[in-house]
Image (cartoon, rainbow, N blue to C red; front, side, top):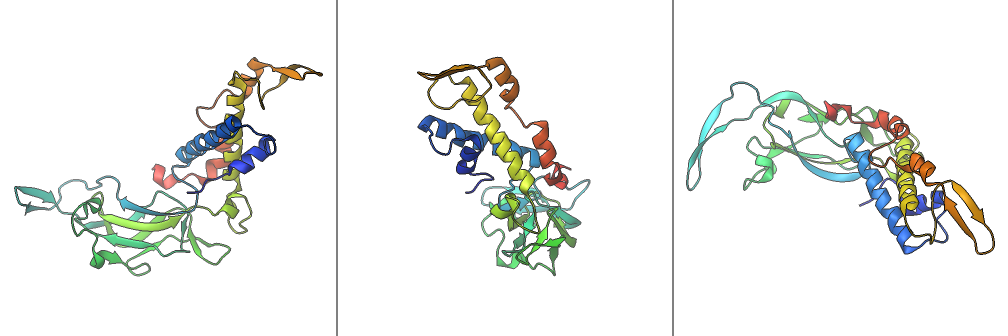
Length: 265
């Protein structure tokens, strides 16, 4: 599925690229998962380039009185609120939106998040540029349009009822952009934060490991030659590596400009 940083890169940064035990390798892999999970929670989205299919709005936004209609199925009759297009902006969760692969968007005012038989049929497909348009604000190094804020605009087309819009789209940063090698788009701070958070979690686990076999992190309090041995200053090590519940202030500063503020609101 892809990740922000690779196990090979984290191991290299930690000096574990040559000699590494199976246990240490597992610690690195788990640390990456935890670090990237914390980063995604802070950003409010997954920054890795992926194709996604989602339903919007996520909540029922209709306010006040709405029109209703009676419907029946094989066993009962029920009163359903009708949904109409009443807003001009739709905020997608994952950013930035990429035009490298065409977006497919459908509106079904009784779509029910795709659970109803026949929902989001061919006739519900909308045309980008005519029915709606992403809020494109730049062009990437390959000449494809990019929408940094994840906003889709229309002329009052978007329904207010949850699950009435189905959108398949591509969003996120390429591997090159995450490494700061993308040219036009530099997402290097996300990569840097992921690297530092992964390393911090590896070092914390290594400090706490009871085994003295293999690599350990932390300031040495003593060492000897011959049958080589050393000990770690555990109190100082915990002050350096002990807070793995969230992100450090430094990581949050690196990520601040990449947060999807629209999704937060």
